[in-house]
Length: 435
Image 1 (cartoon, helix red, strand yellow):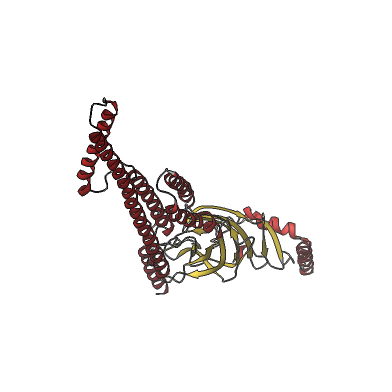
Image 2: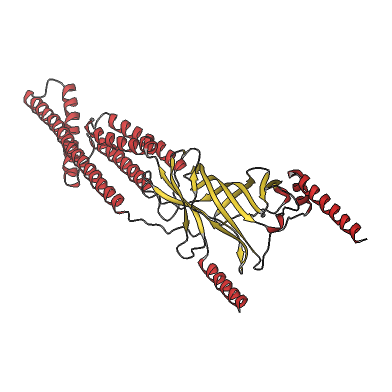
């Protein structure tokens, strides 16, 4: 009887070994899927630690007007779920592939994201016999960047992408970042270039880490389409003072300059953001240039008006000129009357009237010449004034751009007060657990 029981046990052991040896990867995968491990692995601390082994970063686009960056980040993760493991009695396989939707996978939290789309890199995950899972997700992220555009287009700044787990009262998902991050794909997005990317810790809370992307603008496009045209238009305005003040040619040219500059101002408004703590200096530059051009145009029109013969230049000479003009008009009328009178009038009186008429006509021409000379002096003064203003402006721009007087506040990703309260709560819970 004892011998029969031993033979039966030996047969059962042989059958189980044969079954275990015959359970291939698909059989093993079906056994694990049948467990329905959709919940997170929870140990004694009710927390899950997920290691981010590496990351790949790529900048997709950057909207300078809205100050928003779109990027793609591939996150490679690894964690251990002991209940997914198996022993030699179950199968001799060292690893098995499982559908990603049949087991628990961690959900990442992006603290400063405007929009996030997350999808698995593949539809399968790799699980080894110890229960260690290798998984990768692709994140399409849109974040708001607080980059100082004061010296646009000569700008370099950092844009954070905060990828973390969730944690509350010492429970939840804890991510352990590694410094293994690289850039993939093109490093240029429009006029912006991605210089480098690195994992950075928050200075106040070291356990909070984020991806810091260093971006820089390629200034060639902005210089050619905005800065250089504005400088050339201002230079053309100064050169236009060499045109004759009479005839209206200068006025037409200055009006054309103002209209042309307005077109570039519209391009700037559509291209560059004007908000924020530090508005780009290029906005102030365009405002100064527009005011300068309009003022130059108005003064040119006024000077053209002053060149007319009936214009008055100053209050002290106005009355005298009016009296002389009145006498001249009277002489013209008298000369006309003399020409129509009969020969009975004396020849001497006629000659005197004609001489007085010619003298006053000559005086009127001299006044017109003096008027034009006075306007010419005013025109030279205006030219020197605008030249002086432009030189002072150039000096001010150089000083402002080199001193970096505008320093905006850094973008706040986390609320420090809430994080401090959470840290105190975690510390108290861990102390109570130890006690």
